[in-house]
Image 1 (tube, rainbow, N blue to C red):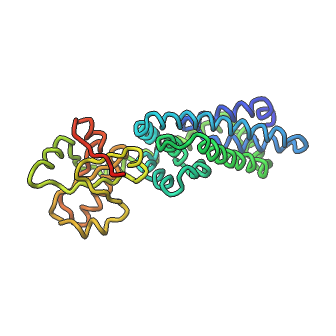
Image 2 (cartoon, rainbow, N blue to C red):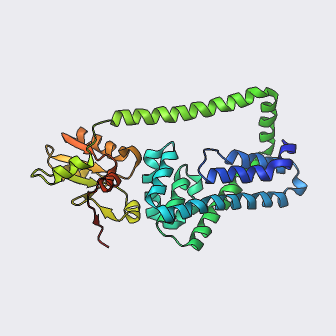
Image 3 (cartoon, rainbow, N blue to C red):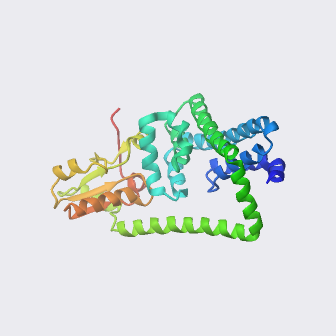
Length: 313
């Protein structure tokens, strides 16, 4: 372990952290722990190299995050949607990030790296929300420093245990790689199966934008709910005409204010309309007979050539 850390530790940390910050599914915390443990085995000379690795990790994180920050600033919604599609929890990542950002603002970047999925979307969301670059660098740099310091610190504290694990894995030889790969594959497969099961349970007919437009022009216009979070509506400050804002976590007001036999259409800002489908299922369980998500949400509505209204400032 010591030879690997001495020869490749700094480069390994830089490449691994940069890849993670660019959105690749390559966890970097184990690398930080490994390098921290390797440096701790030479306690008399570890502090300067440890600070150097910390600085390299922060720099790599800021390089990758800055790329997504500017992508969010330039492309807004398209960047956020693309990132959510890369996530194993893409149906919830946007909602969770919007709520954290709506509550804490740019300060959420100081803790985002500790919450799975939050960092990946909060960085471009900060760009889309037109956060100032100095504020972004300050809070993102703080978060990157705390996160890397934790990984390196864990390696230092548990260096002997890490060394034991590495020695055990080295004795297994190729079997260790197979074991790690199998565990990772099982985890990804489980997340995929869980997501597919969710989508299957929520699978119901969607309404097309053209059909919704025809219904809205008829005498029996449906109730139309926009369940995008406030942060996302700030990025995309438009609404389908006649839509009413609703929070899918608070259904009491909806249940009390609308007849069960009326038609309801819901749209969100998440891939595959999962949040809208989830809310539709809840409303059906509560006795609503005709509830449909809008396929593609407001983006598909626009793409169909139908008008939107700007949100009141």
